[in-house]
Image 1 (cartoon, rainbow, N blue to C red):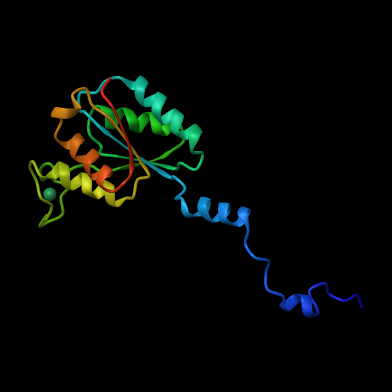
Image 2 (image 1 turned 90 degrees about the vertical axis):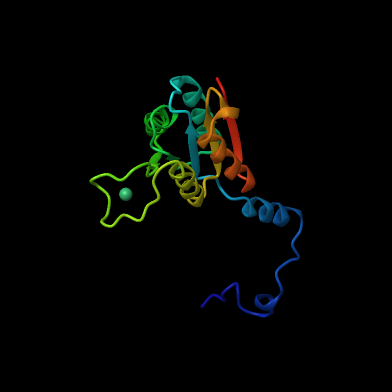
Length: 164
Ligand SMILES: [Zn+2]
């Protein structure tokens, strides 16, 4: 029978000391692989091109991207829904609960009205997006979009804002 190569004293030898490459591997492993992009923006955003350009660039840059989270509103969210699908991403819409509807649970405990947008934003943040893209024609005066971007920046999430 042939001796197994792992037999003998060598088997108990400590592994070689870590050198340059092992450290490099550790650094790259500590970075989270981006899997989730969040798109937010204006209800009146009608230009598909910047969303195609930015989502396309992200998908090429990060082949690991798998999900597109958005707030399920008209405008940027709706455009992003179709564009992300075109790029093969799975869509995770998170609608705001602006008012109660016949689809609500009974009794419905969701907050309605103005606070619904920021509450929805918090839900989207809790889905741990890796990158946030915001499309708004008047970002400084936007309420819900700016809130989303502030949440993301405070959480140290890479965020890009586009105004045209
Ligand atoms: Zn409700």
